[in-house]
Picture 1: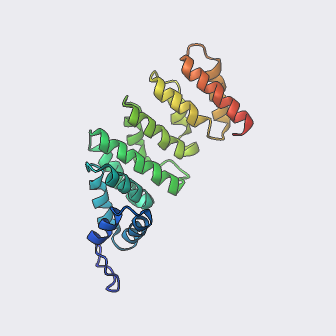
Picture 2: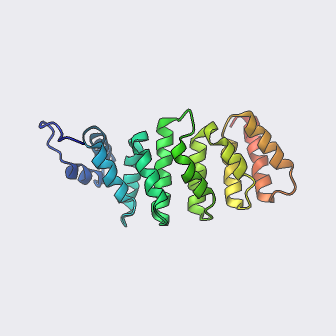
Picture 3: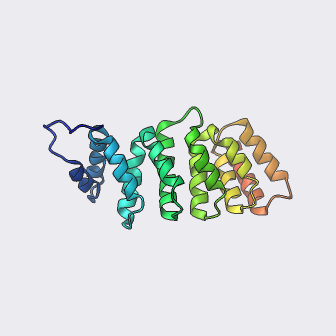
Length: 206
């Protein structure tokens, strides 16, 4: 149960959300920092609600703000994704998860993400596809096996995006996967070409 902020701080939660909507990004960042310090639970709940807001700018700012909470926002974001079929909400949740993963640099695969990732990999919507690949890429070696499996998916966009992500993860399994794809004539031409390109970049260390 959250208590009221110290009396010396005059900003209410409503004040902070008004600051989040301000056009100045520095004011946005300061508001986010105050939310984390003073009203973490209430802020996460309200920011989660904003993921379905019609205002694109507010939605984007809410995604960014939620990401700043790191692991504290993970459970609420996962829940929001799983109980919704709306594309905007699901895509926004995935973007939040990408930011959380970037901050936390998880050393082990968070079990709560498994259901989100599995559902997203089965979704043919391009926005969901690219967002879940970004999430797996951000998870690094923790998401590599899922990317390797996705690189042979019949969804060419998913497979191609996965190949690109695999090429950015420094691991022997990445190299083996790319070589296998590049040589396999049963694989879609676009995916093979992406594998060749990733191998070249991998070899050059770029």
